[in-house]
Length: 204
Image (cartoon, rainbow, N blue to C red; front, side, top):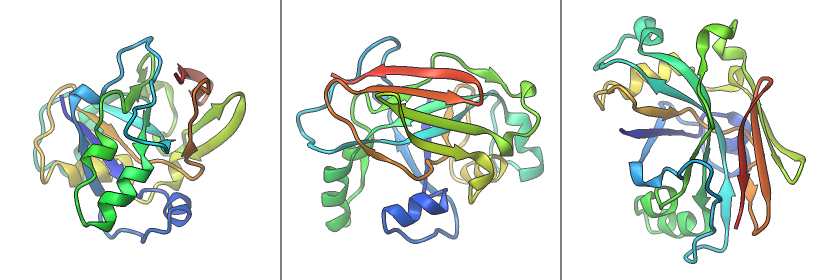
């Protein structure tokens, strides 16, 4: 299983981090060992003093594909969910300043949180109009709608498949909206996609 993540896919998030709008999807990977086991708390790692949450809509690939045309991309996934891309922001900044890869800041153990279930996309009228949100200690910290994406889900699949063969079970994180921020011990995160609560996570 590959975990493929798209960075800088919401304009407001690009602005809040002072980045530039990309001309093509920004792609990075998380290893399968980054997936936090279900029903476990997230423990803040010792190597960072600034772990940020980044809530994202996630799709699960359900068939093998390479060089997928955008008009056929919808055939390569049936389920949609939510995930949190935890990022060691302090470590990421250090690596970026040295023009080094981000893997240590993005792919560490437990940095990939997945929702408690997947939803069939057929229950949604339009996947490019999905509302999703994250609360921290019952206060809304992130709100987004997939219509705000710079690159749509189908555009992402078409682009990613030019570089990586997509396999059954691969996951694609489609980017985070504005509002990313730090977590602390004893925080409580909850995330919903439309009216479905999919994430309920304690920070330790």
